[in-house]
Length: 282
Image (cartoon, rainbow, N blue to C red):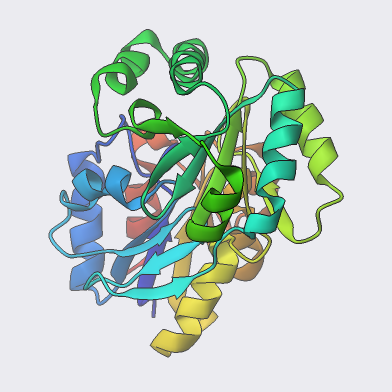
């Protein structure tokens, strides 16, 4: 019997930015009635999921920052696995060397080592290029978005001594500079670097991965692997597919995810989460 369903957000559960279709919401309610809780596993931070979780009739489990922080349904922090601060200068230096902008997500704000206004401008430019002008406009006007709250680091030593870093996200309008950053990061065995979409890379602690975080939570909650089903579409979801048998990939997923999936379901736009739930939970 499935007791917990954990889904990625962008490209999996959300049919539009910060929106869950009624079809998917009805399926989640159906799963709850069948005895299964629901959770999010995402690269996002807490502020950017608050409006999404409010759409549900129950409080979800939250695995944020690709596994850096875990919140139980009651809002209690049940797991933390932060970026090792000693690598901050080296990682941001690699990104800067390849002209890849970056945003540093911490427990109390968003930062960059370069000009904050320029990073914001290029982030929105990239969103317009890889997604749509409409989505870029949302990021441009929503004052809660990380890109609109960036602060340039004034003192790197003080920053690394006082801040808890969830992740570093690098991005570029083209993929080649991002791929170059990934190659340079290969030597850091204490770090994980994964992509959540086109032309970006997210760097975390090597143990801050969705699948590993979910395994930690599973053990503390007294669940077994066969009582959990997971859904995802991109590179940062692979660890869930590697650690949990019942893994479901929307049709729009990357090829590697599809190869590892227990089952491929309808695309995100066609409410693939509901397809997975109704097709598997009876």
